[in-house]
Image (cartoon, rainbow, N blue to C red; front, side, top):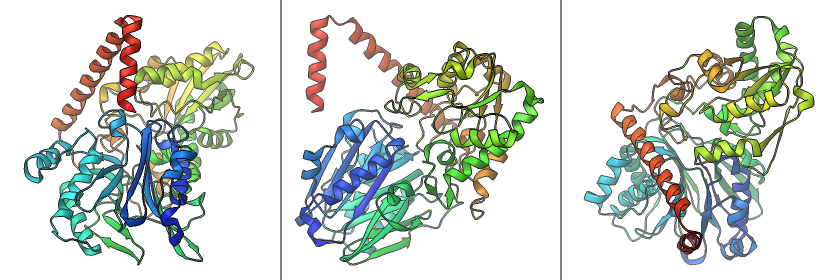
Length: 522
């Protein structure tokens, strides 16, 4: 899961200013919750020249006054990365760039499920070099390949829409994409099922109208953009100095936005596909209340309800109100530690839990506590939190999840590639409770979860819920899932071997080795 944004400014003076990059950087800061592995910006200035800055790290670490000042231009695209396919190496920080044809930069949120097939096409038929394992670079080169077929010295909007139709025909998966053609304009398009979110807004000024595209509406809202419109499934926008062109490039398939956006990824002050994330989470709390009553029977067993900050706070508040049970904040969060779910390594996730949260014994001592979290994924965080509650003096610890049991891999851009990593796979609720050390685990039902989102936009009949059901809207073969699992195991083995190799190095040799790695990254 990544965060993307793009901007197109109408003021002619911005051709040689850094205003576009400053606004992109501010917008990426708003979207930081969607990715903390890497950040990047590419802008376009006078004469169609591209200016780029990207690196591993948080937005505040990658960008400073000096490099933002050098990112001049009236349009640009930005990206914050959370590693899914590929690795977390510097080479896979986005946006990506190719110089042929015309000069194109591209950033992408999601995951392509036919990457091997696309790589084969680029190697053997299109003869385009791909330098990383990122499917975003594949997307860029597929687009460039189709655009090159025009054979024109200059392209127009219809040429681009034709090339995009070729991209849609070849690329399968969930994706929201922003791109920029040197000296021409900004492009935004979304997969035919609308799995990954994308919204466009405008800001009127004395020079005309500025446009911004982003993963979430809150990014546009905080920068003064209004008149939000979700990019429809299979739809593409082209923004140039002359006009904004919109075209339905391919017929929309069944509209199935990812429900995990509302459970976890989206900021509560965002509206995604017409659904308020905040209101959806309130509704999740109401649905969860019914399951708590059903599971525990007597509510007298629960003294206090506590959220696992921050995502579950809204759900827990509504659950407390609905059940008439005291709500308390038992965990204090360190705001300067990243989100554990989107960390690229299991050991990092485990180690960071206790650095991120601190339990207050005065709220736990001698009480039966109902902890509420947005979901239980690998169980790493949940197990540590239950243990922290017991160490703080809780008599009983019940654990409620705003999402149903996650039992299947996600293939559309969320880091859940194998069932074996999911704690609910092959386990009952009672077995999950035993595994995380809780007295009981209470899950939201899938029907209630879907209803809590759909009630705010009844034009959406269904959501992408494959992590709960194993049903994939784009159609996924068992062979593909097996390849994913084997790739995950191989990556884990490689990390362990690398870690063991570094641990065995003599101090002097190790420091020289690390210095060499550092120099390679710079």
